[in-house]
Image (tube, rainbow, N blue to C red; front, side):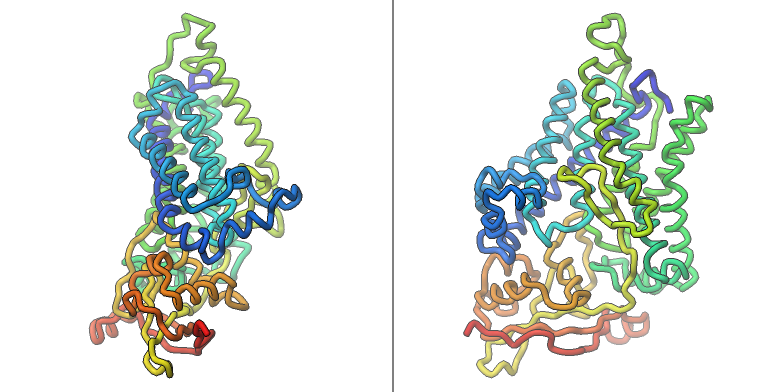
Length: 493
């Protein structure tokens, strides 16, 4: 690793990608929250956050159940949530442009810590709509990004290494979850199903699903290699202390490139919100580029810089952060090798040093809950509500939404996997009966153009991708088979 003391002098480009990329994903996260939180969790939402906060009240034992949130001290309102999102979008945009990075290192630090605390305030009251692993991943990445410094100094070595440790937990944790999970990951058949049954397919998912079985087996082998073997080589630059020359840095960069390539394939064949995107950004932390880093400061004034380019106060802060993260990561390290490995688990209130993982099992068939409404008193003619991302119309090609997160569509995928329909879904049907405008804005289309339906119901269908012959003959992307009415008909009376 090309370092001069505590300065990662060859990782200036990596820092640029980390700071700007993570800030861009925070911008997407806050835009997503601004557009969806009111309907999902606002004052009149499907799971109103004020109800949760009222239940918590002043009881200390209940407060410990929440991660830190500003809305415990400042009473929640839809307006205050919108103001928070607006302010954080501005801060995110400034970081993407690179404005705070031109100041002293404490300026971008405060900006990223503001994003971290602001988004944690949202996630803490987001309940099931914010229960995804990539929420805590973005939070942890934002916390680490706060200590990357500014343009007038090299990136601190300790923070760059902490990003490698985060990447290792994300990839190796996901690999171990799969090996310990469903038999389909061990017999190499998982991706024979996954492209078709994943939560939200993309425009190329059908083409990926129709590839030969030998290709899908190769995908699984490649996935195991990328997640169980490659992550160890991310730390190769640390060997430069004993192995002179560029080889350790090249090995680390090669490992990062493999991770990036596998994540790009997942981006191309699915819609996993910002999970793949944030992993790609974090992987750039292992790519050192000599000559691209910030110039090393002159050490003629020992009071200003006891280490090359890094002021004493900044060295103290980043070293303390390193010790803190290492200490908080001990439960996650044990979890990686535990017999009962936890997936997407946080071991402290601040969501630092988390355990990650995804898709330990793969569903073999796709069941969709289709929501229908009728304006007839007798309920004879039913029309479907179309969602933005989840399958509905069999002729509609899935769209690419990631890294934007369609939270309602994702929760709709989980419905058939549970033993019963969640409480939020019943409220969702009620909002459709009321023709609630914020709720309807979450959908692709309202078949009744704002008119209140007399009845609504939920019907389950089995979906599969159309074969090439079916696509040519009927112009369909999906073939579906109706199963049963799972709820309804329901009316306001």
